[in-house]
Length: 332
Ligand code: 4AZ
Image 1 (cartoon, rainbow, N blue to C red):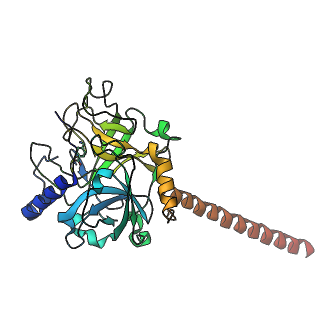
Image 2: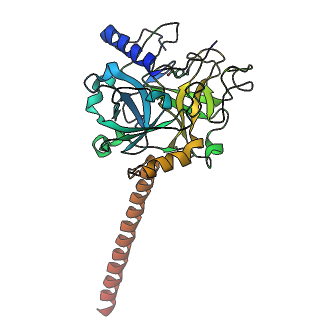
Image 3: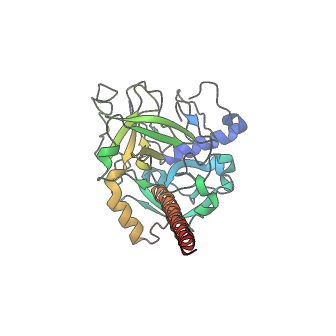
């Protein structure tokens, strides 16, 4: 079997078919499986998720890949999502593709595809998008928040065998042959990091014809019931540190079909790219100035610190008043 190397063309033609089917696509057949996922309740559940589309006037039909918010100016996605002749737009702060224009929408000014991306093997399947105008993240508040990436320094603590991760996207929910079931609402699922070959959920070398390089890793479930699928590409696989701060650990890249027994999904391994991400961003302007999720946590701490300060002053004033009063009593 040959692993699915999705092309943008495939995804856009699927989107076109979806468009022709009209509203019927919005309602999933009972038991239809992201594969095996759950619809998000609110855009604030996965505020780092963005959608890529190629025509602002018809968002749903030209949606083709996911992406992740690194800052108000930079999006990270899969390099194979860059195979696009049209202009790319990004929508943040949404869960419903039908209401994408109610989110924060920006035009992509420049794609930065990893220089070593190999479209045959999908090695280095990673790209950065610089937006023409910064997204006004304050406008969408809790529904659009940038996220940090896993690095070589913290990878061992976060990306171990069986670590829990969250995948999300607007990709196909039906893995039966030739079937399309694209949701308008963002879906998510919990999957676990597993070895791609031999020691994980599968006892065979599942991808003998396609090398799993050190720039990739696999994730899935023991029963192969949950997985990313066509249209989820470019989107996030997130892990959580001990403070429950989400960090981007992977980018949905490829795999043999979707939720097929013995074939876990393959993801781009973010920890390999910190230096490339940092230099691409700093060399091409607009270093992140946005509030990252972990910085929000810190600012929450600051609030508590402020509270401490206020309480301290209050105590001082009260002690002062007490002393003044007792002095007054003594002098009487
Ligand atoms: C795709 O075509 C795709 N099951 C994404 C993920 C996987 C397969 C295909 C992994 O975008």
